[in-house]
Image 1 (cartoon, rainbow, N blue to C red):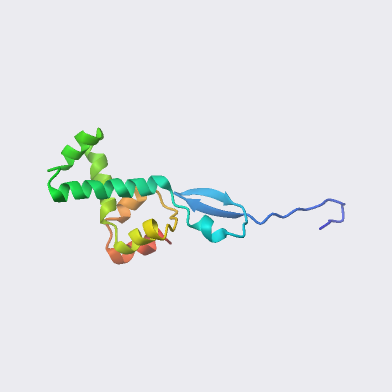
Image 2 (spheres, rainbow, N blue to C red):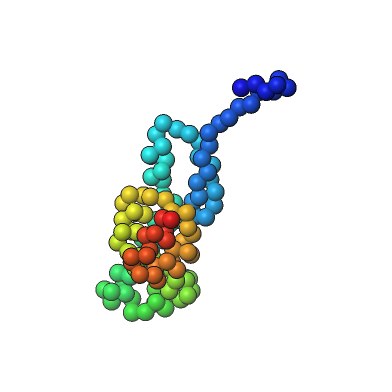
Length: 127
């Protein structure tokens, strides 16, 4: 497309998507569904750790959060905050882990959302 002053304008259709609260530029592609299924490895790792800690508490392998924190060499507060991820609604977990649907919120925000009723969690995570 040429303008009256003989300049050429090139338009490249890019999409801006948020991942963990940060904008990311996504180039157009024919296989966009595969690009949509990319999940943040940090989020998956945090969910796996939270479930592992929950299982340790439920099985009696660890009696308190302090025991887990000492074994992991982190603070009790960190364990207490991150273990909330193990109590997300099954719908949210299915979308994040199985469907690999990316979310635009941070892990810390997700720990806060875990305290909400299950009926509200999915709309808050994927809004």
